[in-house]
Amino acid sequence: MKNMRIPILISLGLAIVGVILGSFFDLQLSQAVASRTNTFGLAVSVVAPLIGFGSLAILSGGFFVLFRRKEQYRKGLRVFFLIMAIAIYGIGVYFTGDEFFGPNGFVGAAPRFVGFIIAAVGAAAFAVLGYFLFRNVTHPNAWVIFLIWTAVVALGLLIAASPIGLKIIFHRPRYRAVADYPDIVFHQWWQPCKNYKDLMAQYSITSEEFKSFPSGHTTEAYMCVLPAVFLPLLKPEFRKVQIWSFVLAVAFAWFVAFARILAAAHYLSDVSFGMSVIALVTFIGNEVAIRMKSVQLPLEPKGAE
Image (cartoon, rainbow, N blue to C red; front, side, top):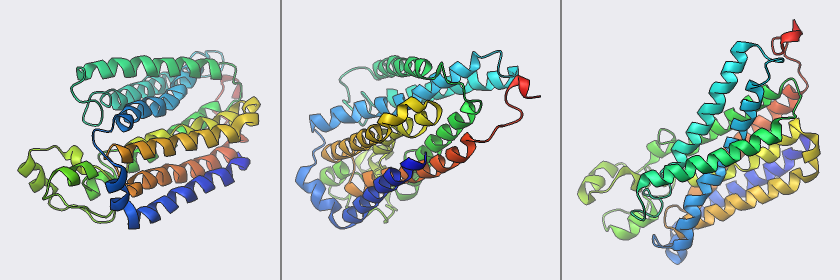
């Protein structure tokens, strides 16, 4: 919505300021507060993706609502809605499940498959929430808004959180690796670590220790702003709490960002850059959604012919 332009741009500006400050004080801040055994930081690290992807699972419930509307949509479109609902739910479980007892969580505290069970249950709860949120939505272009929402998530995660995005270009060593291994030196965010493969072999560590920039967890946490941005486009009654919901979601993202620094997994510039990427694509998605909300697509409902 138009009233979200300024809040989104402010959050983008704050993230850019974080990148700038991190460019000067990344190492000093991590040296002052970070520890790979910080229990609080680890706890937030395992919960954040569940909540972030949970906000995406809400969208899964929305697509399922559209799938059930036999009287409104053609069969082919309804099949597409079902595929989207299943895919979004599955992606959330896949990317969340390994966080609990994997390399970024409480390693060895429980078998890793237990994390996937927790993720599956959590995502299902959010999907059910999404179903009830969207079951009364009647806007004919609801599915277009859903697709824009999905595209924002996909683009943001691809750039800032995916192993085939910026992480694979920079291979920045995490602070915990810099602190633990003498030959792994601090890199600024714009300095690719070119000898990371040699260091992996030397210390028998995984590539996970060279995925500091940008922060995937913070990017995933920022996904919580998307319901605040897109839900009121389809349910006007949510406009009353839209701004406060957005502010709360942004505060949660910064909370997760600080926890990732505490856990020695990321620097200030890592978390700030991750937020700036998805804030930017959220702004673009919001602008597209505003324009599409008033457009009647001729091939959508059965009766449009």
